[in-house]
Amino acid sequence: MTQAPARTDILDLARDQVLRRGVGFDRDRTLEVLRLPDSRLEELLGVAHEVRMAWCGPEVEVEGIVSLKTGGCPEDCHFCSQSGLFASPVRAARLDIPSLVEAAKQTAKTGATEFCIVAAVRGPDERLMAQVAAGVEAIRNEVDIQVACSLGMLTQDQVDQLAAMGVHRYNHNLETARSYFPNVVTTHTWEERFDTLRMVREAGMEVCCGGILGMGESLEQRAEFAADLASVEPDEVPLNFLDPRPGTPFADREVLPATEALKVVAAFRLALPRTILRFAGGREITLGDLGAKQGMLGGINAVIVGNYLTTLGRRAETDLDLLVDLQMPIKALGESI
Image (cartoon, rainbow, N blue to C red; front, side, top):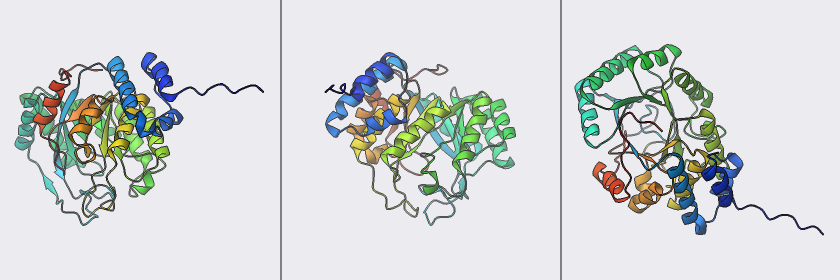
C-alpha cells in the first residue's frame, strides 16, 4: 500500500509562503494557525515577528485618538457604550476646536505621527462635517502630524470633502466576520460598512479597517474575518479585544484569554504580511504588560498610545519605553510602508 505523503506543517508553510514570498494566508490556512496548540505559541509568534520584520521593517507607527463627538450614537453596536440605545454611563458631549488642537499637540509630543478624530455617529451631518473641516485646518496649521478621521458611514460627497481637506487616512472597522456581524449590530449592515471603505480607497485616502476580537465569534469566524480584511486591502488594521462595557449587551462576556489573543495577532500577521497591524483597545486587560511585549514581538508594528474613546489605555510613556527596550524606532512622519 502506498503511504500518503506527510502533511506540511503550517508554520513551515508560513516560512515558505509568507516569510519568503510575502503571500498572505487564506482563510483555511489562517484557521490552521488559530488551531495551533498553546505549546507552539512561542514558535508561532517568532515566525510572525520574522514576517513583520521582513515585509514591514522594525519601525512602529504611533497614533493618538480623540473623540470630537462622544455618546448618543443611534446605532446598536453591542460592544459600544456610546450607543444611545443602551443604559451605559457614557453621555453625549462634543469637543471644541481649541481642545481638539491641544489634544493633537499633546499627541505629537509623545512622538506619534498620526492623530485620529473620532465621532460616535451613524454618519456625519453637515454640522459635524463643518467641525471636522475646521478642526483639520486648525491642526494642520499648528501641529506637524498626519490627521485621520473615523466618522461612521459616508456618502460619496462626504468622502470627497474629507479627501479635499487633506485627511490622510479614514478608519471604518468591519468589526467582525461578515457571517457574525448580525450578532453584533442590527441597525446597519456589513455591506454598508464595506461600501464606505470602497469609496475611501477610490478617493485616494488610506484605509484603516479592523475590528474587535472576543465578542463570541468562533475560530472559523476569526479566520473568515482575517480573509474579509485582506479583501479590503487596508493600509492599517487595528486589533481591538473586547473590554466588556457596563450597560451594553456584551457587558457579561468573558475577556479573551491572552493565549488566544496572541494567536490572533500572529495569525492576522500571517494573513496580512505587508499591512500596518495596530494594537488598539482592550489589550491592557487581555494581555497586560508581558502580553503587550509578546505582541510587539509577534507581528504588531503600530500602537495607539494613551487613552481610548471611553476606556483608559496604558500610559503613553509605558508604550514608548517598551519600544526603546525592544529597539523599535518610531516611524517618521510622512513615511509609508
